[in-house]
Amino acid sequence: MSSNKHKSINHIQYTTPKSYKQSSSHHHSQSHKRKNNAASSHEPPSTPPPTDSEEGSQATHPSPSSKRIKTETSPSPDNLTPSKTPAIDSTYNTIIFIYVSSPSNQKFGIHKGLLCKASPLFQSALTAGVSTPDLQLFLSPPTLDDQVSPEPSSPALYLPSTPVETFTRFNHFLYSGTLTLDNESVRDLSWADVIEIYLFATKFAIAGLQNACIDVTITKQSTIPLNLPNAENMNRLWRPDTGAALLRQLFLKLYAQKADLGLVMGGTGCFHRDFMRGLVVELYSMKQRSTVGVDIKGGKKREGKDLHAGGGMDFWKVRKRWYVSCENDPVVVE
Image 1 (cartoon, rainbow, N blue to C red):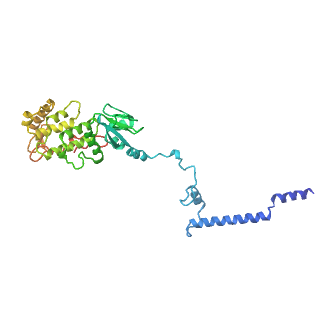
Image 2: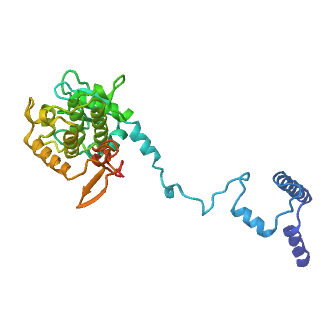
């Protein structure tokens, strides 16, 4: 009896119903067909079935057409290095409002990226909040007068001592690379304009604008004979607080070689004493150089490659001697 009971129990535990066998067999058959069809749709007919090693490789590196499976080697979003391009683009897409020349407070709008690239002082003001009496930063600019209606919560710069005409030239220079406005030529720029722009560029460390003034000075002087600034303009350049040493050096050489010294010494107007002292030194230096194409320097004669065939310096050729070099625009003197 116990033997029959044990046999019955075994029969119950290990006997599978016929319907289940048929369903399971049909399910495995259909699943096997689908796998074969999927494999045949992704592999060329001539491709042999993958080996065990190839199957392992495919599991680790799925093909582009297969479903992507996240593995332990997949990069985490936290480990990705963010791109810096959006920050650069946003810098150049941001408009900074600048109020110029108290009490008129003329308003200009310039791209932040151009200001930061043009001058380290503008960059310090806009990125680190550094202000000076001539360059003031307002994170929420106040109402300076009835003519100014600043945008709330937008940074702005205030340049109270800069003339509107000078800043207009600077604004045009940032977008065009030239000092002359539309329908203007170098002849239309007065010497007072050129000197004022250079002093503005020196004050705010705008090297590109300083170098543009050097080019205009040489070009303007060469277009009209004896075309040089008068005593009033030279005295403006020789004020102690200007710091315009390179433009001073250029004008001393231009006066020594191009000017009518009789008019300079005995003409109308009184030149600054430091200008006259520098001119005398430059004239004496000219005596140490040959005027027929040979330059004497350091006690040795050498061919004067910077001189015209008939004597005198080719100022345009050597203009980079008076350029200001900066990190964004380094100057290489040939």
